[in-house]
Amino acid sequence: MTLSRYNNNNSWNRWVLYFYWVLSTVVLTITECIHLVRFGGKAWHEGPLFPEGYGSASLSMLLSLLLAEVLYRYMKRYFDYILITMGLVYAVIVMLTFGREVHGLYIGLDLPIIVALFYFSHSRLWFAAVLTLSSYMALRVMVEPFKTYTGLLDLIAIIGMVMGTSLVGLAILKRGNELQHALERAVTSEIEAFADAVATQNASKYDHLTGLYNHITYQEYLTALIQQHEIYQLPLQLAVLDIDNFKSINDSFGHHAGDLVLREMALLLQECLSTEDVAARYGGEEFVLLLTGKSTEQSHQLLEKIREKLASTAFSVIMHQRVTISVGMVEYQAGQGKDDLFQRADAYLYEAKRTGKNRVVSPHRKGHEDASQISECS
Image 1: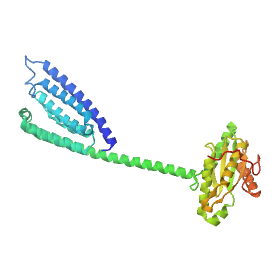
Image 2 (image 1 turned 180 degrees about the horizontal axis):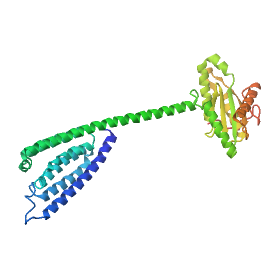
Image 3 (image 1 turned 180 degrees about the vertical axis):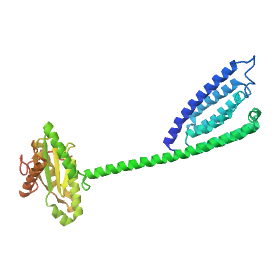
Image 4 (image 1 turned 90 degrees about the vertical axis):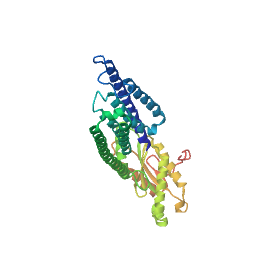
């Protein structure tokens, strides 16, 4: 039994105990009323079948219920079987108590089967059915009032009732299992569909090689940041980065080595950028950065830090050679379009390539700058 099934049974056990308390209270009330009512100075009809009278019947139910409360604390795992057995005990007590006054009370023998259905278990249902029939047969043999109360026709009716109720219960359990399996399949399909949707969404947002945002996502972020800038006048810079001599890396060491260099480049960018910045692979060996919340001077220093960090890294996949980048950066100006912004940044990238590579070029600064006061990427 799984933990969830065990906890669910415990919850049902408590509710069944509440039901037994209510049933005991009703029986006690009825017996007291019968005890007080007299017709011609004698008890109603011939009195109870129970040997000691109405009081003993109520006391027996109360004692069995108190015993059940004790067992509930110490035998929780198998307590459902105890409650099913208590249903039979209650049915027998009611039959012996009111059997002469009210005919047909043997219908109460269905109580254990009804309680068993609460647990949605075939084994408990069979236990209730076998217990009820075997106990009833034993009572007919050993308890004379019981045999007197139920004749041959009653015996046939009781056997048919218990078997019929059990078969109906089996049909209910079968249908319930079918519905449960259908629900599980539906939930599983929904989870799989959700996972596929998330995977598809991630695949459409990220570059599969580097893990950075792809070109489409960069365009979406740029549009949103431009709108934000127009409303709040927040600083925004665009930087275009290109790995120098990347074709020679592929030609000399293979495309696999080139892919590893691109991944290391992406890791460096993720390490150095803040959560307010956006890094994306624009295409090939070219990357774009959207830098926010910083002045042009601060963004330029950040790019110098990235350039120096990369230039000081030896890549084992290319015989411990070093890789450099050229960078072009521009500040966004109000009213400027996306295409114009990129063309300006790309033009400064071209100037960085033309003037010697391994440098950051922008309208603010051109060429190498002293980045000694800038801390390393953590």
